[in-house]
Length: 56
Image 1 (cartoon, rainbow, N blue to C red):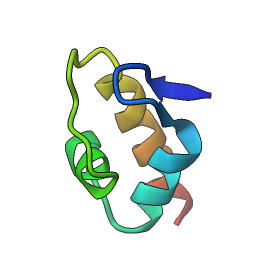
Image 2 (image 1 turned 90 degrees about the vertical axis):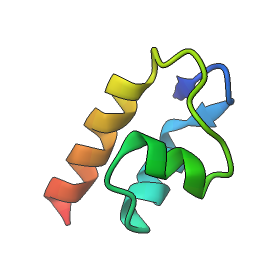
Image 3 (image 1 turned 180 degrees about the horizontal axis):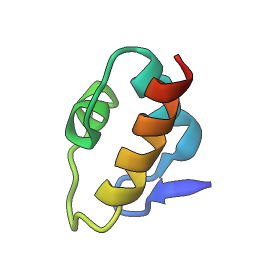
């Protein structure tokens, strides 16, 4: 599933970034070499990161 259309970031990439230690959407995007643009995806990315952190 696509999380961020602006940066072409997929859910699996956000999950990988969270597993690698990213605790915020901005950190996850930086891990991927990108940054949020319009911001509409940040809430969804944050939910994915929170889900991954809870599972850890």
